[in-house]
Image (cartoon, rainbow, N blue to C red):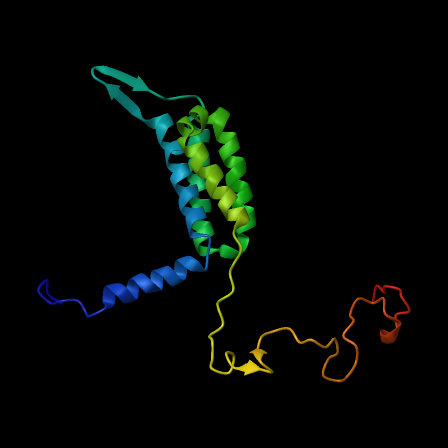
Length: 182
């Protein structure tokens, strides 16, 4: 393929939609925030900032601890992207590492890394996978008895003519008002 060969029609749109579908099935933003939070935490202890002719070295005795915390946060961010089933563990670990970074790594990467990691960890803990919407068919939109098909029936009986009481307190279902454990 040469540089003059045009890309296939709609290839960018197709790739964008594929990425959008992939991103929607995992805590993408949580992983991104955790990774962004890890970068300043591991960068600032090793940076030599120059202000004019003045060199400001942020080297501390906890430089190795800062590097470990930052690398772990970046790894947790990638873990949130590619291992979505452990998002609670990764989110709690990101929050704990962000809290540990305050005394270890120059106030958590000058509070920037701390805030990004805390927000990302909270997003990871709060994330829940969604259910895909069911496709609407013509049968679903038909009206039954003057109302929509998905309306709650007015009777309290199931298809067999039995009362639909699943609480365990009705004598009709043989429970005699007692809940049973099994």
